[in-house]
Length: 498
Image (cartoon, rainbow, N blue to C red; front, side, top):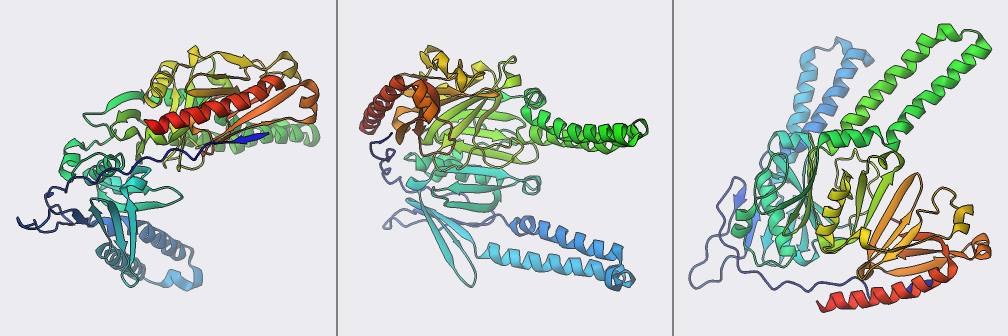
């Protein structure tokens, strides 16, 4: 039984055109239109190119790859290359580097972006010209990425997401210019009447945490908390078992079938121990470095998430685009009272499963205390208190399906959200606003029908796929479907009238 209802998520009215831009001071690589005369309209656009070091940053990977391949050929002596002098190889690498720089310079020279009062245009191409136009009203997120090589040179990449897999990357700007552009675009996306100068005045130039003077820090995650979460995670246990089980089986076979078990112990210890230690070290290093100095802050443009040591990621999440939030608590985190919080954001894509990633992710908190979780939820939905919601649990006969989790499976509602709980090895708690629901469905299997049980799932536009309560009393599930449909329609109508 599926109940679709209501219109699509609310569309927000186009902001009124902003006041004409003020003239901006010239920077290297920046061209401004001449100031208007008294009889002409004010200047309404800024034309700018990427930083002049962009060709060098984008070409260094290709140069290193070609140099490494030629070096291997020289050392291995394939096809008689060992008799060639070194200056030949150096010349080849230099030629590749020169060609790469020339191609990069041409690409840089014919690429520019133009910001006017209604849209951002990115024009590129030498022989074949392309122009991408992005209206400010379509902007979903603007993120600043700083991979290692650009970061060493003080550069950053601006990643613009306009929805429906429509993303644009501006590579590379100076770090401060990237933050200025990000702040300007996000303010315009929210309908703020702001000029370039006004946006620039609000922008800071942080090195490790993208937090401005007007931002409110909600939570920070220190490195020792990241280490704690990694030590008691299921990932580490899986990694250890992945090495320990095969080594143990091999030793058992050698002992009871080959008769050389004692002599083989050092061999097995070295063969399995060294890779295991290296893998564990890499696991901890990548996880801590990717989430290093994790900072969640509240800004005028939305929630800002900054993280990373070698690769710094600054991600802005508009609160109005958040479809749901999921709290997760693995088995070994429960005694520590720690939680992981994931976001479901319209247009952001799949949920992040690898906490070692340095890309844009769905993590709102990689690990946090209950107080930090409550603070983060309050920043998204003020007034939400999970401990004030009354829950309806699965009946005792559901023990046949969930012997270890039936006491946890439950749902609860208030005037703004519906909350579902499920899971055993990792407990999940999913929070969905009524106004973000697309449909509600109830379903039963043959045995569930025999026992009078049913499942209810709540569908949003995101991809977390965890919004469901399972093995509830069938009568309660049926009532929940229709009641939640009514609540969703009412909440959506109220939101449209605001």
